[in-house]
Amino acid sequence: MELDDRTLTSVAAYDEYARAYQESLRLRRPVADVRRFADLATRGDLVLDAGCGPANDLRLLRDAGVHPVGVDLSLGALREARMLLPRHPLVQAPFHALPFRPRSFGGLWLSGTFNHLPRAAWRPTFARLLDLLDRGPVYLAVYRGDRDLAEVEHPVLGTVHDSEASDAEVEALLASHGVKDLTVEIRPDPILDRRRPWVVALGTFER
Ligand SMILES: C[S@@+](CC[C@H](N)C(=O)[O-])C[C@H]1O[C@@H](n2cnc3c(N)ncnc32)[C@H](O)[C@@H]1O
Image (cartoon, rainbow, N blue to C red; front, side, top):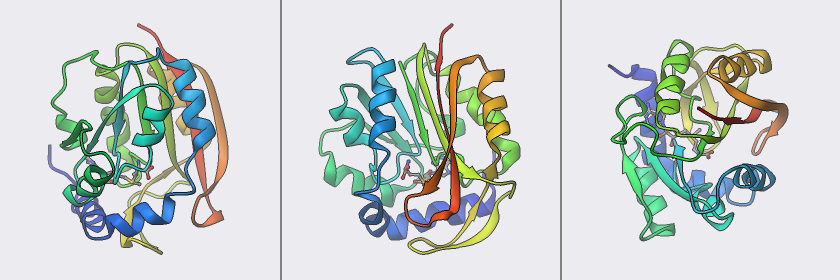
């Protein structure tokens, strides 16, 4: 599977600005969501943070009592993550070719994971990620809207290409893959506030 050039351009922005991106978000993380997610997981389980970036949430997840594994395509982001977490499992790989066996994880944390993928890739990518999950909580946070890899000037990353979804689309994506007990909420962006709303969903998956 080939990655869209616009996805690769966005990943390159994380390579270049990983530290600034990490710093800009350090005090603006979804701490309550991490706790709710961890409460739905089994203590000590491995959970997958796909698109972990420079470890914005890995430490929070670890401190909440689960064992997160971070994956990202951006080596620059993973280098920053490594500085925060010297002995933590971090893997550089694209979402469509993750080196894990099916049903390896007890939770799936997807914060901004789909932001830079074409909308047509969301459903197959979500299905692949879900194959890696045995059971447990599924968290998905995406930009709210209907744009598909639209060019955006991000205050920290520069020019990137973002995709968005409506709350109904997010709910349908998760529900149609068997994610249950869903809550779907609209939240302000941690940097851009209400000018850039997010859709945030949390549910549980059982086989
Ligand atoms: C919006 S950032 C989210 C970072 C972090 N989860 C957070 O919430 O701040 C999206 C991340 O996904 C990564 N990414 C984008 N497309 C990817 C792909 N196809 N495979 C692996 N990682 C990808 C980017 O490098 C970036 O670190």
